[in-house]
Amino acid sequence: MTDTDKAYAIIMAGGSGTRFWPLSRRDRPKQFLSLGPDARSLLRATAERVWDLIPPERTFVVTSELLREQVEKELPELEADRILAEPVGRNTAPCIGWAATHVKRLDPDAVMTVLPADHYIGDTEAYVDTLRRGLQAATHGDYVTIGIRPTRAETGYGYIEVGSELDPGVFRARRFVEKPNRQRAEQFVASGCFLWNSGMFVFLASRILEAIDKHLPGLGEQLQRYDEAARAGDEASVVAETYAELPAVSIDHGIMEKIGSVSVVPGSFDWSDLGSWTSAWELSSRDERDNVLPEGGIGVDASGNYAWAPEGKLVALIGVEDLVVVDSGDALLVVPRERAQDVREIVAALRERGDQQK
Image (cartoon, rainbow, N blue to C red):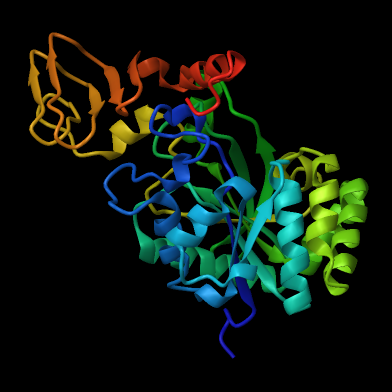
């Protein structure tokens, strides 16, 4: 038996991707877009990478009811019961816990690899090797998180402080640290003892459910109800009626930060959580003036810009620097690249005035 025979992949694909407006919309969010150098959608790329290790028949995608059909089209290899559609988003702890009940019913000894659907990974071979080490550690009962070796003092990521080596390539996670200010981020990177928190996890399905019962007992009780309803053939109606009542809490805050013994496996592959249009600019091929332009685009005395437009539309930039310009056809975004994180404020303003599809 190989070390992956009991491994299941859980891909979290329910996010709204508001920082990538106007391309990312409520009914077609970020995970369905192609961003950076890969022509595939982020969801498709995530699935195909993990399928180098774990087959489609042992892959679950947790998404929203609104996005179920898009997931089915994007990943036709999945059986219908491998797509779990949340009636409403309640953050990652309920999402992961619900998936764990499905996996545990299939195999009480199953180990879960939990992956966001909307990240960029640059080296599939190194990535798969990292996941394999995580699976081996989790098979022994460890709660495992994947950390990324930092390449700069990034203030937009959480960090993990690394302790002693437990097994080759597996270390004790001493603590999780929230997004730091610039000075602390520089200290973390200089120390060599910190990794970026990637939001990827590996653990036995039974162990994460035990942790939820201990640290989030209200959620644990509801998940037990779902499990009982599923065995009786009535899970869908119970989930539809009660899912909105689940606590909206992340797996980091709700579980991982409260567990005394978490392991971390460092990954050395290129990685980005693609948190804004700035990330897309960083990952894309740029011209000699650091511009990212659509095919046929023209830049005159322009530098450091990211521009996107529908195929066939000419983009011309003159005398501007460090801008993001995105034309989706029905909406136009122009923002300084350093303020790309603020794009979600536009989405909030549009929703407040009733423009749900904008």
